[in-house]
Image (tube, rainbow, N blue to C red; front, side, top):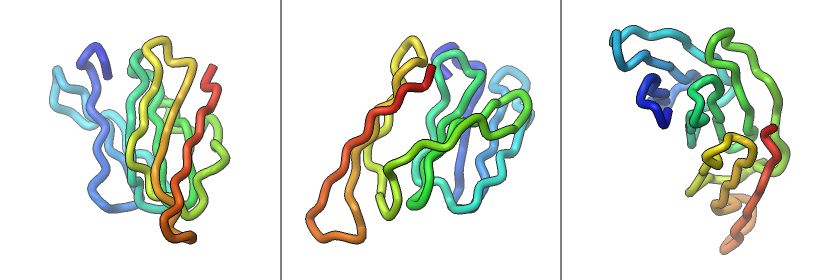
Length: 111
């Protein structure tokens, strides 16, 4: 997170681990349906975005619950993912594996 409180890590498994940097303790494990290809903490540290090749979702770090699913990433391999400084907008781009030489871009309202 921007304040350096949390670190979110995916290691090629269908889970994301969130660590408290001050205590070095794992505070949450998020269970996904597919391996995350991108993981981004929101600047506040309270939410985390995960993108796999089949889905994108925003999660609550405190509860581990999925807050919402985002449309537009089926078969896509994310290359760049950012969350705006105010946490209201998510932008991502990448390649579509179902079509050769195809790029995709998505912008979502995260408010």
